[in-house]
Length: 400
Image 1 (tube, rainbow, N blue to C red):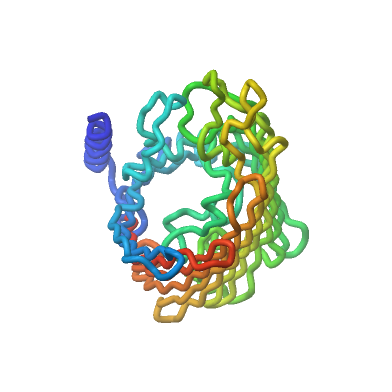
Image 2 (cartoon, rainbow, N blue to C red):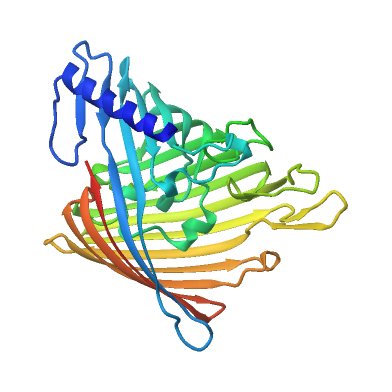
């Protein structure tokens, strides 16, 4: 009921805004509503999007692949609002998730309510090349996670991302960039956040989370922020490269995947706490129709095995280890693309998880760039060197 009320209110607001202001841009892919107030005191862009998937999966039982399981889902459905308030130097972004995958995860720490809010952040350009962010949004983590799910080269992100990313959190971020000479650009991103992930409303359980990231662009900026867009949508006429490194320290973390995963409860319903460190090194390269992305991730914990009050293990273990993800694609001038990905996961012994490898081959047709596309991919996964699974996915994305 609450979700229906929210959607109805948003729809009415959109209708009222459309009637009250002149729409300045109605081109597909530029936002359903795009306008600026007459006194230039604010602007707003409303851009809904959704992704539909068909998934077929074959598990290996030790002798043969079993009969496939088929699943059809609305993987993501989002309502996005962005613009500026009072001054073009004060920007904002609100993104709401309304699919079942977007809002799942209700628990005692968010009052057992749907997690509708993805992003709610203001971005203040308070001095030249400096921005201060405040609110809930993505931390400056691995490049694959910061790339919007709207701008992916394959049907979804890699196993490295699903196991090791640091996702969203509530807090503040300071961002700066400067030129090192010629086209060489350096960007610094610092964040202090709550540490428990998005939509936590019952206060900070453990300590704070600290994140720092450095990025180097020796050949200058990519077209249209292409270092955070997968696939060579904009064909760079000269080579463009971004190399980044992230360090994340979550003090007294209480979840088994840093700011994600399960809470580590003890027998008296208190939470086990341990310090978790995550490191990423990644790169993005583009030249004409070719694109390449590489990522390395490593997570460690001071005491990864959760201990109960009596000194015995609770059964919860922080997912520690490392991973490598390599991905490349070639975009033809017809806007068809072929892409491949290799991912390997190597978990620490204490986790009890076996190493995994996954090989993925995909093909896409970009009708209006990432705004309207059809994608498919085929993945082969092994666990401890043995056959485990084959998955075929196909789907489409539409972004107004």
